[in-house]
Length: 259
Image (cartoon, rainbow, N blue to C red):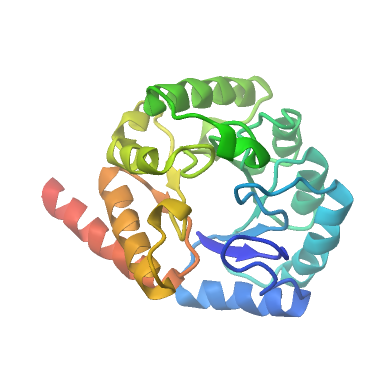
């Protein structure tokens, strides 16, 4: 899953693709580089960020979706927790909604996705971005994540979304302390009990930050490899060529185990 932020304030590439034409070109480039899904976000959920209105989110997002409609050979995912934005995105050709809040902000989003037969990524978020700095560590991160994901899955199933349309994400960095993110990757296999595809988004996260961007890219590659080996089916990344190569090697290692 290749990341395309059309925001002015995202933590790693804010403002770079705010222009719709540049965003369109970047989406095409992500597909050419090997992304199987292009995930577009129009609201930053970096630590400390403030929420924006649905109108502002759509102002950023709609011109990009209109340009992309029918132009990519891979599915478009939209990163939003707002039911209104999700509905408009699905109308404009998006096939997947990636809800960073795990349905905790606007539970009615699930019904919007169900009405459009879309796919849904349920990401685990603890608290809100504007409060993460004040949150203490979790005593048992995997137990909390599993409990909250199970509750969200039950809500989604209640509105009629088939399991084949669901993906779960433990939410690296979403209200978790630095050392707990490594723990989550190491114990990712515990989420296999849900029998759903697992998405992990370690790319350029604060817990991997190094002294320069190149070293951070290597740190991300390590986290991507570890995530795949631990059971991730999808990795959400900014640097598609490098991380696709990393994931391919990890897949080869997994296949050798099975052989």
